[in-house]
Length: 231
Image 1 (spheres, rainbow, N blue to C red):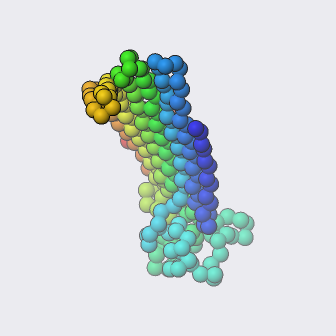
Image 2: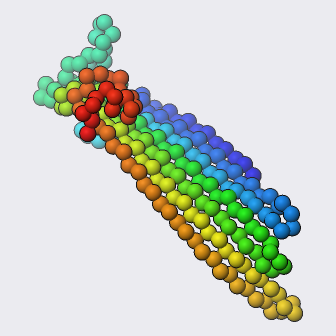
Image 3: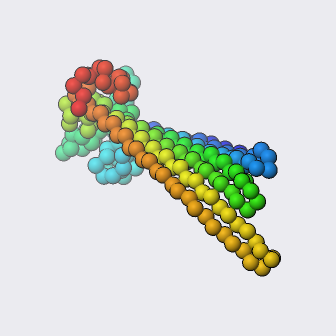
């Protein structure tokens, strides 16, 4: 049995989307009367882009439209550059949400892979041994930042960027020995012994940078190479 799926969702506002790919595979095979084997695999990958929500997030178009954005203020200058004057004389951060929308980085990607191969041996009639191996891996990559032109990025001098990577790995191995016997059609005997072992490992990497001199930093390796004083 095998199945797969793909979904792509674009939000009604600019710069927001969600993509997902998934697949599943289940295989069972009888090699002979003594040996059976199989494997189950599940895979998923999600990618999401979207900006902050809330009353203090000036790049939230709904909040901007309902609170301080009016038709009286333009989004662009005559030369095509962003109009960066404040919409509110009392708050200089109230600027065009289009500018903030284009100068904020909020990305999240997650990949997960689950695998469970197994082998079953019919030793004698009624006696079976089965071994199963399990793998569960989750990989998360988050990126968030305000470029120097963003209203919040200016609070950090010249922008702000963080990149986070998380890995969660889980390995499981289990073996069982099962015995089932029926006597005189009315009586049955069953017994099982087994063991299970599990190992988990978690890895976390975090890198951040303020006062960016360039808006082209898009990966952890580039961040480390361009800025040697990453913390």
